[in-house]
Length: 354
Image (cartoon, rainbow, N blue to C red; front, side):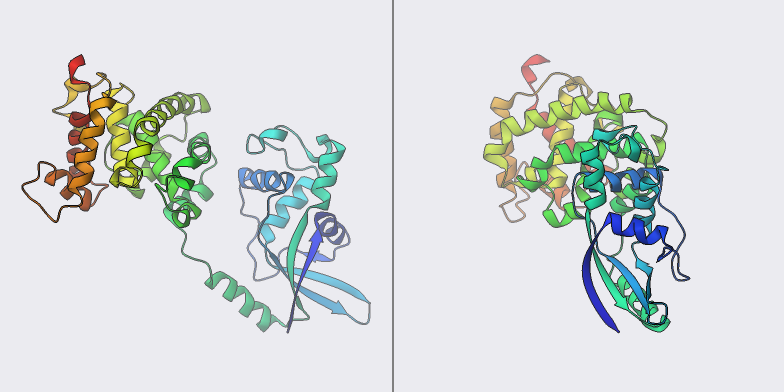
């Protein structure tokens, strides 16, 4: 069985499909399962000339009729979306912000040409028999890494809650790319969207139980909220992140406060002190400090002492031993979060404003 990599344009796929030389649903493939939002997102990828993964064909050459038929081994959902848009059956939405509300026919000539000439990498399995194709198909799927909860949410949801969190994650790329709050490897698996989701949760319902189950529950409970709802939360998030970066990025980027768990705890403390996060069961005992603001001048010394405590080997006499211990436990549990939140709120609060 020969495996031949080549590059084709979208106009080639359209021509083959119209001539019935492209078979989208061989017996080993699923039917159409993509949501409209997923389809539009792919079209936006193409119109912006971003790359998409390879497509695999079984290419059958018939020497008698001198024709070629291509069966899709991998890439059916992408090709369905492309052909649906080309046929004028898919309307672009907010997921394609530069072309919202347009069908293919509504694009200007330059964008239509860009779409049709977009190059797709294809691997052709020449005259492969069924056993060969099924083996390749099985191997392609076996190579896939297990989907993370964040990736699963991104595939499952198309409501404003998903896109508000995804867009904020993208807009705050500095957190992941420059400050490495989430590693590049984890960001590829959308772990950074989980951290951002928790920031939305902090300013919406307060700092509480974390982890993927809690994030998934937040998505489900906010399916019915519109874009305006999340825009208001985004203002609070942006204010809080900007303030933290302004006052801490120079001195603390190499400390625990720029690792995801304690960056999130610092975010929760700053948001709470500035009145951008509500009271909940974790704030019992510090409610008098909500809204007093942050004294960043003195906060620097307090944060430095906490950060230095991590360099001490289990010094139980340290006044910050409890914070360090909570940071080393399961960081998404309420007990750990309450300890760290109370420490940080008291450490950075503008006590003179009480």
